[in-house]
Figure 1 (spheres, helix red, strand yellow):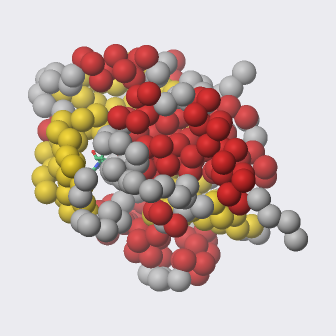
Figure 2 (cartoon, helix red, strand yellow; figure 1 turned 180 degrees about the horizontal axis):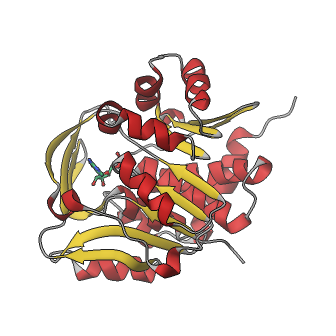
Length: 303
Ligand code: AMP
């Protein structure tokens, strides 16, 4: 039987503009992307907050993925909204508008039934709140965390405190540079591992991802795609695929971890094929397994 994954983070309505088009008020937020991605592999317990305006259709979609929404609090008011515009080079984007709304007062509370989740993922929220979620869990086997530039500068002490309890820290290359003060990714990784996490996943967009641990480095490419429609949430989908796969296999190190990283890259490669969670709404486990095989062919080589 697979383990379950508890995730805390933002649940949002996003408006997104990319060079290929735009979408308004679509389901987004780190917690939503992570949960949907992980749901292809294992049971997911979601912790987040939404306003009374949250569309029923998005709630039903998450339920249809088997995601447990008992910890999704509904508060009078408006749901968190984020508006972003990507540049011609989609590695860069600007935040045009950010309305925290009910997310501004978010105080995560874990339902009793979540307390025996074996895996926990602390998606991008204030590091003090991430720590509070950990302290509400009874016992756990694996802790993952993400963060962003804002918390690295504004809540550095809280973040450094949290890192001591993290097994897998999942960040992108610019966040790794900001956290460590080093532009070389290998030196940055060594310095961040010294801060506490047992493993460090550095996501590098279209260049794939690197997993560093004390004595090992593992590289996974991004799937070569002709058309990227919307990169929003790709990193959260990577983490969701990774943690879902770990929960499914129960193998948290070695080969299980390597397989999970490829699963993360596979789900992220689907996520960018449409706006928001559009592609993941029609995705099947069979599609994931097919592309996993394509990844094996992509990197197969013998000495
Ligand atoms: P990513 O592309 O991985 O950065 O994730 C994008 C998602 O993060 C979007 O769906 C946004 O709704 C969400 N987001 C943007 N800003 C914040 C913030 N300050 N805190 C939490 N989530 C955010």
